[in-house]
Image 1 (tube, rainbow, N blue to C red):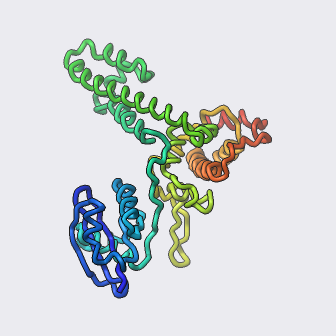
Image 2 (image 1 turned 180 degrees about the vertical axis):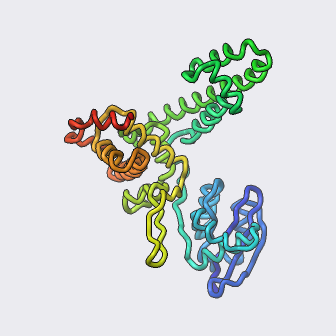
Image 3 (image 1 turned 120 degrees about the vertical axis):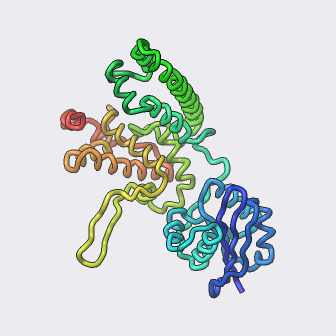
Length: 358
């Protein structure tokens, strides 16, 4: 008899379920420490006849996947979104039930696997999305309370840059001792977060400067260090995509189709599947290419034509999807970005640019 097994992984303890490959009956269930050795010991009686051992992608997945593979287990990594959709059919959500459901998914073969990140694979010595966290918190602290922020804007004015933000706020609240007492701790917190953001961003820039692939990505107009590093970290192994054009769908940049019978068949908004941080980075890079970059290229010309027909937001999404495909192709064949000299300075470029600015 052959067996299939699955783990519902948690930080300290994980639920393990082993089922028969023939009829799906539960053969063994237990809770084990989230350690490869403990899991291997629990599966020892079934190891020689184990077809697959499944677990969901998560923060512990790369480490656990590698260690279990090294111990000789046939491990498969399940796409979290797909597994979640299947497990929603259960009446009660518990770790035990999740392990049972994952085991049945693995047994049936009706799952979407994903590649596991390799150890030590850059983009950099720091997480690509690291600088975004303190930056977002710092920007959020600029307006801690809507009513307070409205009053500060009236006094300090709306044209306030990051450099003179603290000075302008202190000048605005100086006559009021209560406002001064409220704002000073917030300014200290904001300054600390911004300082840490700058430190992390500096580390990221130094690491990206040493990475040849990221430097090639950054030759694309609008693509910066965060976008290049985030894309490399998320893709990890480019050969898992057979076609470059499917990378955009992997990050949720393609429209979701809704079809039922003969009366309903339309394309909805983008699916927003996959890594949200990478999707955001690609969107920002596309927006920078269309609006801020002064370097002309065929992708920008194509995006501006879409903007004239369909609007700016749709154009940015289309260009973001195109950037994902181009960056993957550059990675696969080792080529540099092609600006397409024929489209570099078209006669209608100034008019298109002014249309976008408006």
